[in-house]
Image (cartoon, rainbow, N blue to C red):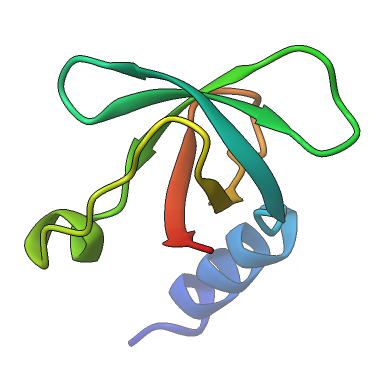
Length: 84
């Protein structure tokens, strides 16, 4: 591998922000494994989708469940990674 290729990949890693893990409560179940979730400390809900492992092992998420979410650093959808 070229030295320049390594430097480019390292600079990309430095510029990316790490996703934050936040707790929230499921407010509404939407079609296609999407959920409207209210995060702790925020009034406005966000849209979140189930992670692949939760889909694979068919872990059910219901309205009122507490969940851990990885938020998108760009302000898009969140990913539900754990049901508490």
